[in-house]
Length: 106
Image 1 (cartoon, one colour):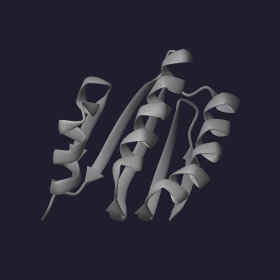
Image 2 (tube, rainbow, N blue to C red; image 1 turned 90 degrees about the horizontal axis):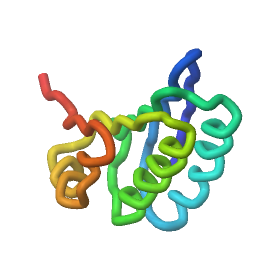
Image 3 (spheres, rainbow, N blue to C red; image 1 turned 180 degrees about the horizontal axis):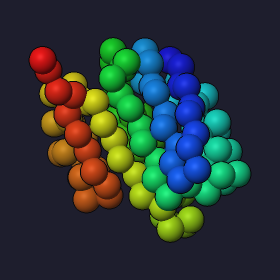
């Protein structure tokens, strides 16, 4: 699992890649949190396009970042989810926290 962060003045975009499980989620959590605290973006975008596997730790990763963004009056968007990951996120209620988008197929 890896996470590449890109910054603009008002947002942070996180490109997630590989498998998200308990171990990998805890490794990337600190980097994302540090960036949020330092930059105080209006929007955090978590891009799941490169994710090949996820367990419930991915839901926890999103929920925790939502809570942190909320303390800074920011919003969250989760995008490029596979159809199955989209269903899992929707069942977990992530759509009530922020926008979620399924990966568009061409």
